[in-house]
Image (cartoon, rainbow, N blue to C red; front, side):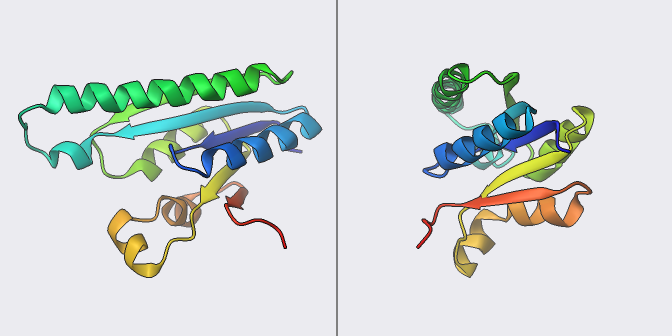
Length: 149
């Protein structure tokens, strides 16, 4: 069935839920897990050099490394074969990075967190999940932050 599960995460309140669901599924399937976080610096510079950019970049990387350490710590408590990767980009299209990397890694399932934002928030922040779902060829499992009733 699914043997290579690819999980892109952001640094939101949804991250742990996506990880927990991914861990459970991978343990049940005896699947490998690749967790990816993309640092997008395009929104910091908008294509121009700004005063203090290096300090902002360093702060963003520091937060990403804390997230990576949290994820690694959580995964080390399992018996899963895993890797955690951080990508740094100045490209606004995070979905292309995720699709390209997951193809190279030969993923056979993507697990994505969805925030279920309203239409205004979606328009402003873009829709990484939507973009991936329209441009991808393998199964995608969506995890949202709402609890079961």
